[in-house]
Length: 261
Image 1 (tube, one colour):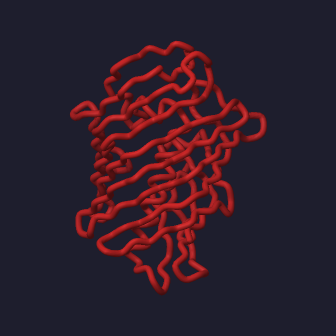
Image 2 (cartoon, rainbow, N blue to C red):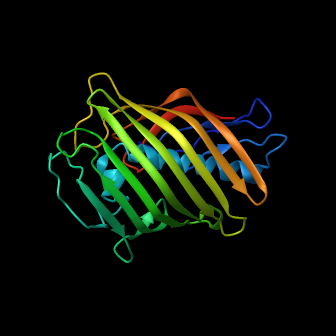
């Protein structure tokens, strides 16, 4: 699938961001309004888009803990591989990401360094299912873009909890991200979100397998803090985000629309 920019959308209400999503996208660019500058709106939009990518990948156990960091293979070391029920989720393990193993070139046209740890636990170690609990500890993505304005560092702390079955899954995403930029003030984003994934007709979720085609719905809140200003946004899904499993990039959302107000 062809890579295209994330669609620019117009805000109809003051203090509202309209986030459009386009195929296999690189960024989200919400518009300006009376109270949010263009630069800040772009930063907020990029943070929301980034978290959509990260949380969508976490519907896969591989993406949650085993280091699904395109374009490289798994790079994390694992403290314990015991999996009593054989469902792919370790009973309790720590995944440690470190350099140079977790340094990649060619990622979105730039380079990516990944460090930190993810504690992954199976809440039902005696029953094979889709459930897991992940705790992120200073889990850092340091992206150096082909253009200076695309460069950022994102450090995540918090939890993700997955439940579900072959017909669908839900992910509770309670993550705080500290984001830094080369030429602007740092920002903190606290996400309290629920995502649900529904396979496309004829598809189903399978333990240990990547997500099939399907749709994502996202709801909840996130709070953006920069300097002495804090903004809290309510997130709703206007059009479900379409997940295209055949897309060859790491970003596989082909269409859809979120509102953050």
